[in-house]
Structure formats: C-alpha cells, structure tokens
Length: 184
Image (cartoon, rainbow, N blue to C red; front, side, top):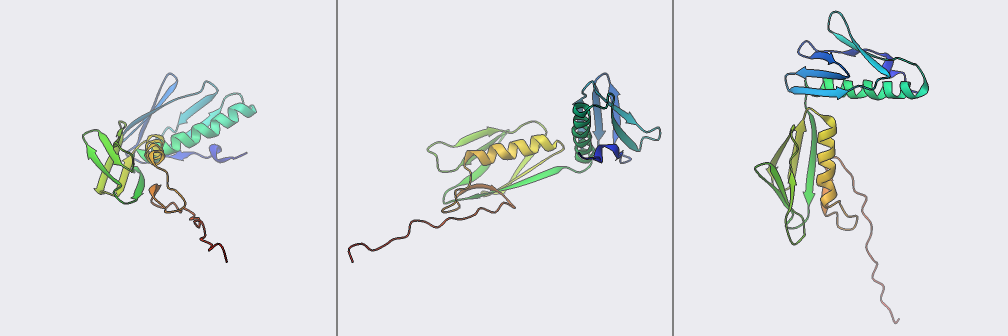
C-alpha cells in the first residue's frame, strides 16, 4: 500500500484552499476546482497556508484507500490551478481533419457525416492545423476524458496507422496478408 498520502501537499503562494461542509475548494490563477470529501477523510490546512494534509478518520483499509485517492485528486487540483494539464492528439489518414466551430469540435475521419463533439466547460481546444488537436485545462480528469472521447471516434488501426492517436502514442504496425503465387 502506498504511503504517499502521509506526505503533505505543498501549496504555492497563489493557491488558496478552503473547506465548507463536505467539500474542498482549490482556487488559483487558472480557476477554481471543488472536490466532495468522503466522510471518512479529513483535510487539514497548515496554519501558514503552505501545506495541505489528508488523513483518515477511522484508519481501516477502505478509508486508507480513500485517503490515497483523495490525496492524489487534491494534488492534481493544486497542480492544475497553477499550470494547466495538456494533451495533444494527431490525426492520420487521407482526408482526415479537425476544425473548431464555436463550442464544437468537428472531425472528418472517414465516415459519411462529420462527427461533432461538444467541448466540455473548463477545457480549451486549439487546432493549430487540420491534423493536430491541443487540449488544455485545469482539471486533469476533464482533459483526459475529452481526449479519450476524441480518440474513441476513430482509434488508430494497426495496418495503415490511420486514425486518431495521442501525440506520444506508438501504434504497433502489423504486416498485411502476404501474397503467395499459387499454382506453381
């Protein structure tokens, strides 16, 4: 079992953490994020406001697991409000492209009709050219989920490599059918 959740989360001078009821709010230069707390978990802010500690109230196995999850989510929230999380996708294929229209991302990826995806709130999308998509946002879960939804429209196929892939993703290519001359 990980012991990372025993370590404090250091807070930048620009980050402000508040608690009200069963929620924790993290505010920073890039926005504000909230996290509902499990009743088995307590979050303590240092008197100086420079560190955040997550502790389990009961100490049983389940609450320690939730403690680790809460610590990880809070650490990502603190990191996200100071420096945004980014994901980059590439589109490969003849005639495949992406463009922005208002709050929608339009994908032409080999289907008879274009695929329209609504951009979630808190995620900034840029298309520097027709074959690259850049996602940016303070919430790691929203950025990652939207990137996965885009990739799911046309995952990369292993024979020609056509489809939508993450910028650092390696698609293992397969060899096609070998042509064997018959009759000899």
